[in-house]
Image (cartoon, rainbow, N blue to C red; front, side, top):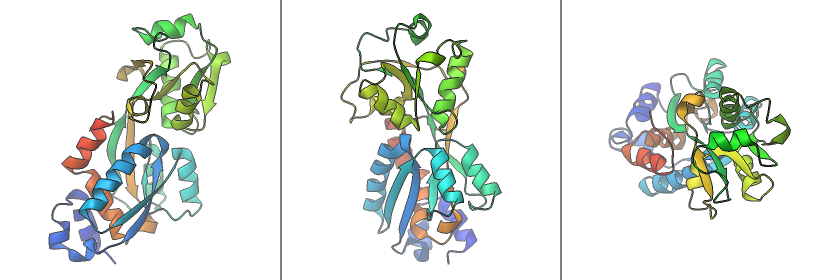
Length: 257
């Protein structure tokens, strides 16, 4: 068992963990639930983390709402990297997440994107107001924080009701991106990180949504009770706070607190 004071120290400062507390650096394996929008970044972070330690990290991705439901129903995840801050705190209140371990690891950025180089020129507001497109993809606001941010943006612009007939919804922001990338929607509100990804071969055109049009997409992490004694989960969450990890997160198009 990893004592509470060691766990708290590890989450604050990974640098000295292996030196001062060998018990927490013994090789372990953890299963981390990761919001879809952060999957590519998580894969990069896992590679870097595993190169620095003997731990093994496996990730499972999905919408935050779906992951939350799985966790509440007993899925054996050791930690959660959510796309919002509400669900980790709900898990903490329900004593499913370890008290005091919730923190913001990234701040998401929303973009209006189209593979068409000429569809979104300048201010995306004008494109939305003209409405000369068949379909607009967003993530489901009831399941995904990026979908909620897209809905807030359209409401801030006074366009939510007017564009109802053109909306198509993905379960998560990754699916919203896929709808646009495959041509099933002409444009959509997606994670900026997905547009900037090296995997995206269609840079197209985009409008970076001003932060004041929606509530900040703060993405929180939490150590779950299933991972209470899991050294790999504790160390990986601590690694997310390191300068190296924060640089990686920022390089993928996320903000930092």
